[in-house]
Amino acid sequence: MAKAREIVFFAYDQCQLLDVAGPASVFGVANSIAGRKAYEVKITSPGGRSIRTSCGVELATTRQDLALGRPVDTVLISGGSLEAMRKSIESAGTRRSLKRATKLANRFGSVCSGVFVLAALEAIGPIRVATHWASCGSLVRMYPHLTVDSKALFVVDGRAWTSAGVSTGIDMALAMVERDLGAAVANRVAKFLVLYARRPGYQSQFSEILTAQSAADSQFADVVAWVHEHLPRKIEVSDLAARANLTERTFYRRFSAATGQTPAQFIRSARLDVARTLLEGDLPLKAIVKRCGLGSITWLNAAFLRKFGMSPTTFRNLHRRKPAFANR
Image 1 (cartoon, one colour):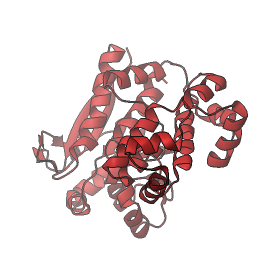
Image 2 (cartoon, rainbow, N blue to C red):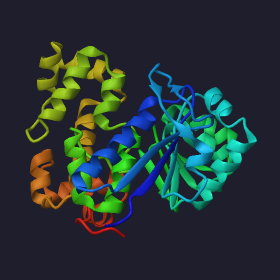
Image 3 (tube, rainbow, N blue to C red):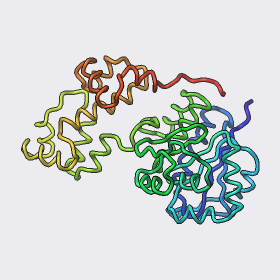
Image 4 (cartoon, rainbow, N blue to C red):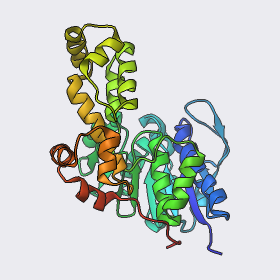
């Protein structure tokens, strides 16, 4: 039986609970799905005591210098406020052991703003990284040698894995499980966790639907959700105006002002966003066109190329989910 991979989280007072609990749950469920102890998860902190996360929930931890005193498979730094992260690495001993751990680990990384700790430790060179959208500007200013991808859910650059905000740590952990145990196990973990969908790293931190919902008021949020549920059918502006209880002219003006897109632009972007996700699987292009209400394969090819800079077939070849495979 293969030896369990040690996954060590570095946590501290006022860190984000979900940055630890989300990915840790993925690895824990993977053990159940795989039918063996594929992962051994440890939560560490500078003092090895109980810590209080930013939401008030306390976590029991082990001493970081003991857990990281030898090479482990994966080291992940949880995110928090800049002040909380600064305090977490005040100790020279903490800094030394963390930096050594990142050098010796098979892979290392961060969830959300935890990348600031990696940068402060000089554990990462001029590589591409991800972090929470609200922290991208600060990260660029403080560490200009990093290439910050402000849109990606997570980024893998060599041994370094960095994720965007909070819940994207779950997406990144699922990608790790897929690499370690295969796509079949990762997909079953996602299903067990009742995730809406597995999200690849290249996907934007904001889907077209979420962006529109965030920008629109409650009146248009309902319209946006309705569009997402009815993409296979032909959608007219009159349909949307009726749902919003507005005239077409008034709806067009107000929706465009609220979301930054005309109704037609939003519908087209929403269709392409869903098509991009479906292209990761083996669904035929004709079926994707029908499911997304795109009209024809020719239309899909042209629109996809304009929006994403490549054809649907090229995108599928690059991002198609791989079949399950044994441990590497």
